[in-house]
Amino acid sequence: MTEDAILEYEVNNMRVLARLKNSFGEPTWRDPLPAVDELVSTILSQNTNDRNRDLAFHALKAHFPTWEEVRDAEVERIITAIRPAGLANQKGQRIKTMLTQITAERGSLDLSFLQELPLEEAREWLLRFKGVGRKTAAIVLQFAFNRPAFPVDTHVYRVTGRLGMRPESLNVEKSHGFLESVIQPEEYYSAHLNLIRLGREICHARKPDCENCPLNDICPSAFTFS
Image (cartoon, rainbow, N blue to C red):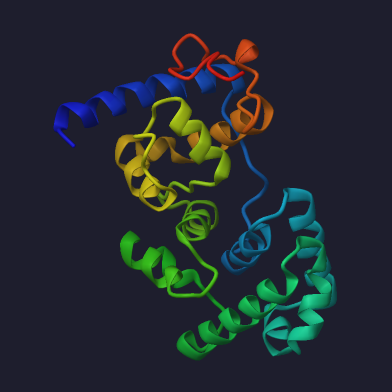
């Protein structure tokens, strides 16, 4: 891609994000979770909604007061606790295996060292675990450590394609790196949250509410959905 094309995306994205911030305000997510909590919570969130994720996460914490107890528990007990999140057999085994691997490598479940690692090293360290993709790694880095990583979930992916914030043909994996390159790092936090809000409240997957979208005058996809 040419420098001119990259610059065009940067300018467009600055305009889009400024308009979203003007409409939705400066977003604030829940209080930051410790890194292991954020990591487990994000694994639980895969292929489910926030309500079910939270039910499973709080049930897990109620059954096991510490992550060391989760790590050492029989996997069937973990599966039972997280069943509200769906795919419990898969997620339960992945969580237990990941906690075991972290302990074997680091000697404990303290992930504070990721704050000091170069960003790409920290990202690659997280990506080694089964069930941890680029979205999960970016969420941990951004929300647990306030590091410049831009998570692309299903809402962000859909909305950025429709708004022309990235090449529409770009797949999810490549969209993480591309969007990080054409959005200012200091905007990652608010951009992620406001794009998710736009996707949930207005730019729905099947029938977007273009008429009430604050971006309908600059969106290349506006009013093209029947």
